[in-house]
Image (cartoon, rainbow, N blue to C red; front, side, top):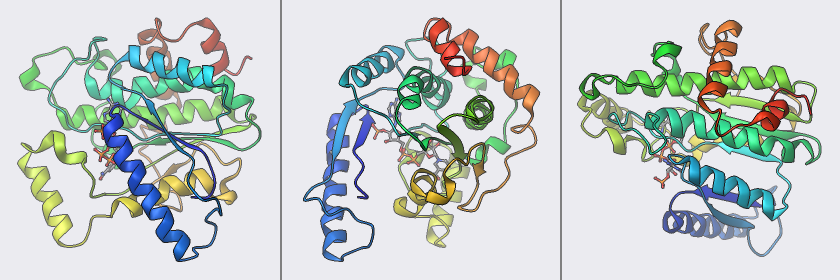
Length: 290
Ligand SMILES: NC(=O)c1ccc[n+]([C@@H]2O[C@H](COP(=O)([O-])OP(=O)(O)OC[C@H]3O[C@@H](n4cnc5c(N)ncnc54)[C@H](OP(=O)(O)O)[C@@H]3O)[C@@H](O)[C@H]2O)c1
């Protein structure tokens, strides 16, 4: 609504189109209210592109389509995610939360970074993480779960995927500090979205969420989007990177998330896991050598 062209990279065209229609309708309402900072164009520049983060083939297809569109890229919001999914392996052999929440975004960033480097000043990457990163184990030997599906720790592995995003953000910040790109991570809050669809059987958590909602402790999706929008458009954040926003003002992730040795070990491990997806050229780009 501030005039950017927004590409909605989603796995379902139907759901994306519904969401886009809702955004268009909301734009008309905001225009009628003469809300400040809303652009004065007739319609919004919103587009759908197909992307299924649980498939590297789809991720490659999205990257190729984006590259061949010849577009610049000023902002990349890695928001899509799944939570507490029962043990599932993707077609690429990875546990699904690891792949959707972390690995696929990592690949996209690695491949799209060269475009961002050429897209002018103040480009931003935002990794939507979660406070659940506090409640998990960090064990790179078990980064890709391969044990008994019945013993799979769904909340542990969800938390891990969110911890990796914060660690990745710190690794990237060190590498991009002197570039035109800043990278931050954030927790959107406890938000009343569809996040719980994959853990309806998790009674304790659904009860907690139900009570939170009943007492008005859950944010609306719009309020949950605010920290993301803030990280993307707030002019005061120009050049600010390496921050985990627990609220609009900032905040602290865990000491483990901020542990540089562990962050770099994760970085190395990730590049090993993704050796077929991220080649020498992209590694050079990630390491700031091009
Ligand atoms: N809600 C909360 O309280 C909360 C708290 C902390 C962090 N977060 C984080 O916030 C982010 C957004 O979650 P949400 O709360 O908005 O949940 P949501 O309503 O379930 O939305 C998740 C989005 O991710 C997309 N997605 C899931 N799997 C995908 C895949 N394989 N490929 C492409 N897109 C996929 C979904 O697409 P479809 O529409 O096609 O399903 C949906 O648009 C997540 O990263 C989550 O971890 C949420």
